[in-house]
Image (cartoon, rainbow, N blue to C red):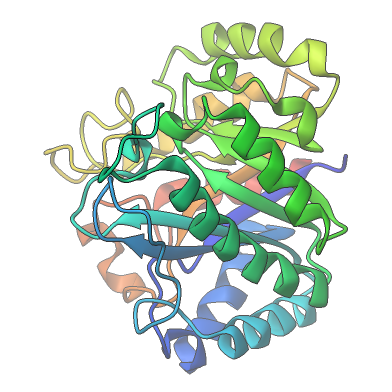
Length: 309
């Protein structure tokens, strides 16, 4: 598999956001400023709580199908390859890793079969768009930790997606969870979220390599990144960490991650987190403490690394 020099784009974009000229300008800047060759369109469906069984992907909280298709076409005009990543989060703010139900059906309680039916409908909707737009890869889920034990349901979901989409399939497991997915044999590519502490990358890469080696499949980090704030390089997955703005810490995280993964040929790239559809003014980059790298010192680190691959 070719090396994926990617960025996740448009997370949290709502209806109408992709029609704004600023969104196309943002995608163009992403390509120019980071030397990315892939864009991952991450879609943010919702369900009411972690224990609800209805996944909502039609409404004001999502870009429309036409908006997405138009942005994919624009990405093609920039010579970007495309992944589509339909993701879901509970609307009450609980992280999707906690979506969970009883393993044995109980009357009057929410059930796995109902959730998987709704979630599969959601995935198939965008898998058809991925096929229509010839997306290079489709990501059938992201960091769904508590769901991953449902081996039978995930295998069926992947098979159902293959009925409508003929490109490469992957599933993005969460950090530290690479051994938690028993059904890696069903997908074409293995991927996980690379939010590992500064200085710990060699340990984690040694661990991951042992886990994925028996599957003999390509691997990449479908997410990886670090906020630009003090303390985040040690807990890069904590988006709510309280800390002062610190671009140098974000830069150090990227330097360490790239240095260590470059020595591992089996790591075939990144889908970095994340590049917003609507950017802040570059003059205010030093006021932003989030994962964004636009106008920050980490941006050049990323571009230099991607250009070297």
